[in-house]
Amino acid sequence: MRNSLLLLFLPLGAILWCGCFHHIESIPPDITPTVQGEVKPIPKTALYFSPQLVQYEVRTSPATSQGNRHKYYYHLGPALEKALTESVRRAYKEVSVVEVLPRPGQFDRIISFQLEKADVQVEFIPGYLRQQAKAKATIAVILEIIDGTSLKTLRQMIVAGRGSSLKDASGFVPYASMQFTEAMEKATQQLAEITTNLLISGGAEVGSK
Image (cartoon, rainbow, N blue to C red; front, top):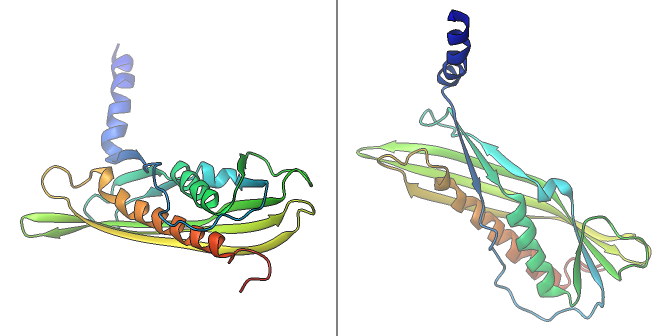
């Protein structure tokens, strides 16, 4: 009986000893670029995202002593995929999202995105009678333009978006995970805007400067 009680209380003791809390949030998947322009008349364009990008999850903890035992997990991949899909559709006429890279001749053009990095720094700033939550985010992707017939890379570049946020975190919400999502939303928005402008202007095409 004593052994049974010991086993019963072990998990609770382990949780109390760890002292950390895990917060899981998803970045809103409705971030889209506002840029509009002339759509390129390329008939068939394939859009490919690396599995790493689609499934990417940011993991971070506050850099300050306040809340530093809390672990934050953000599902960033789906929001990135949606925003960049809209970017490509603003620039190309007929776009099909594919799960594997196409064979030669299936499409006229292939646009590929891979995640280069997603750096998110969060902290709580204590103050007199109040506390603030601060976050900075940098999200960068590798944009690759591929010829659909030869599968040769026409151009490859890194595109990055940045965002920051500063929110009141007083009272009982200092460790709420949603305090830091705005920085990642802004970084994703900027990334989508820059990508759209590049594609519409032809900056990602071969021969452009």
